[in-house]
Figure 1 (cartoon, one colour):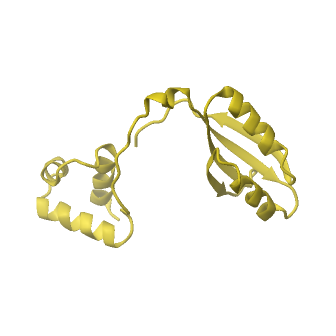
Figure 2 (cartoon, rainbow, N blue to C red):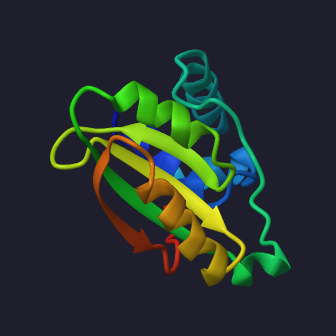
Length: 140
């Protein structure tokens, strides 16, 4: 991937529906070049699809957070199995460093968020946790 590919991807992140002619003009290349790049990036699996982002009016009430979790001993698989059963966990990632797992969570309000934290912290094998609320999201 070169600089032109990175600039093209950046423009598509901002507006995935921008016409090829506009992308070509902004990048200073031909439409044929943009089409060829899009095709190649798709074939290579760099671009896996296009989607639409919708803001739900009720989303303002949603509490979103990242929970970093430290697991004791070798019980990571058991902890992951327990966490998979919690519907408020949108994604779960293994990581290195101080934290073994990172969970992306979403709750209907602070009360359910507090209950979720209690549920997560009560799982056998979780030694420590740190949770950060997501206040806003930047478009990249």
